[in-house]
Image (cartoon, rainbow, N blue to C red; front, side):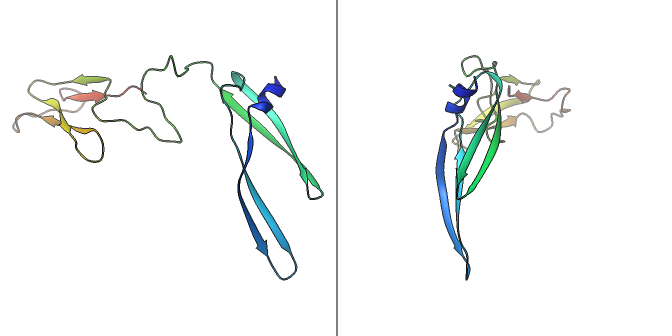
Length: 139
């Protein structure tokens, strides 16, 4: 298991820099670790990556979580990636209109596909959560 997991973590040199002072020259290399999730074991995994060079050795412990469910095939709804969820307003999961108040699509609104807004007579009052229109987005 550990061997397969280690193969799923390719190491790439992504950036290097050089710093110098009057007596010391230092090379700093930044490494990016990425996981090939199709090769990583399902569930929790761990690996040790050993680095050596420049008269020094060190080990980096790596932990991952590759959930069994949901998979891309079984997922329904919108997914967070890098701390963000991006949703087109008109791609709601459920729309609830309330009496004369309803949601309408505004095509080509803003920089994306569309926008949504509530429409209805101005004298119609609505209480959020009770008798107001609602859009729902499954996460």
